[in-house]
Image 1 (cartoon, rainbow, N blue to C red):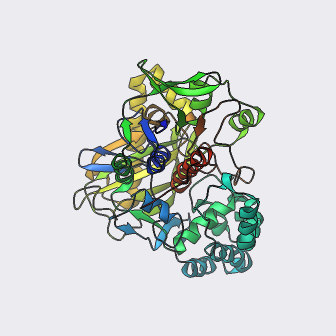
Image 2 (image 1 turned 120 degrees about the vertical axis):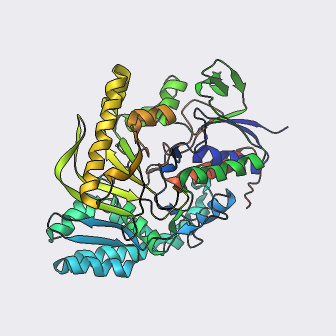
Image 3 (image 1 turned 90 degrees about the horizontal axis):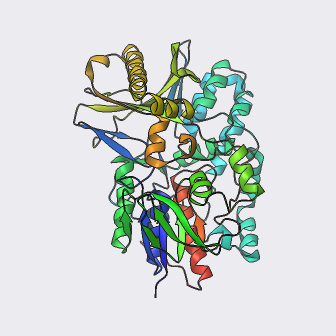
Length: 499
């Protein structure tokens, strides 16, 4: 008789886990608090517009890297048109300078040398790392947790030169490397390339640009929700079941063994194995009441840095943006007040003029992510919903005014706008502190192996961004695949994965 596995969360990690377990003869059901799949990998409709909340680029969009195989096994990209951008983004300075971040490594190096010939040495060192990393292809066949001594030796022999590269760059932050540039504009613009915290390790920036150079980090036309629905369809076709609007409140434990889940409405579902692909903090400290922790877990949730909470401001604009870059980072004349803790002096605007499925012809979604304080927005929503709505409106109208002055012909053409705050993220995904990607990959956390089990608890596992520092879609999809291998190994089954 097939073992019954209950999976909490229908994000990419939960769907991936379900797909691979179904491929290997397990009987699985997924319980999801929201009404749609994808978790943070989602989009939403407002009038004629679809606002995308996740995918800017997808590592593994082409066969040039091994993780492409995972997307094929999950039926995530079959039949989808992939857009490979010539420009990653465009960054403007206060004195009219422009840094076009090309995805081709040769063009990018030429552009950086054009801006800062005096920084040839630092530029050459950085671009050399991008090109070298493009040769590195992390294997996906076997879960690292199942590596034996021979596997480890083979891995070291094959990837030794690249492991030296990783070690050399892992301890350098994006912010600290930027200080090596003498040119003031390049020093300012360099940390803005990815648009994330300067404390992030340089490896993330190097790897992203190397994948772009390989044309294996494109955008799948249709956006994030359609991407998630493709994996959901694969899961259901394999015999899996998804229960939406079904929030799990507790993991049922007997004799330190997970035996099922209890929903918020009181209904209980039994299981031989429970897998949480849900928020890590909620899983450990709410669903399990903090009973299965050790010093390492407590230190992680007390000290590790998170990707910040954000406000996503989305505009539906009744015009096309031909000739405009799809991602533009520019300075503001006056700082924009986001909330009591955040003022921004720059905006990164993403113009979805490359995906015709997101709006009618001649119309375009325009989206911005702004750093936000989760406490401010959640408290405000709880205390005064009308003021909360006024603050969202203030933020949207401020952004519209700025973009009207910057790009022109915006304010009179905005047909709809939407503001998702950290409170929104928490309501729909339950993500701790509204963080959109879990643990920030800093020099101290990048590459850390987090156990998929909890101390003292049997028949229970965790997958997703809270056990994969740095998060991202490939990492969480692999998390599910790897766990399926671990469970198969424990049960004496040969693991199978097929397209």
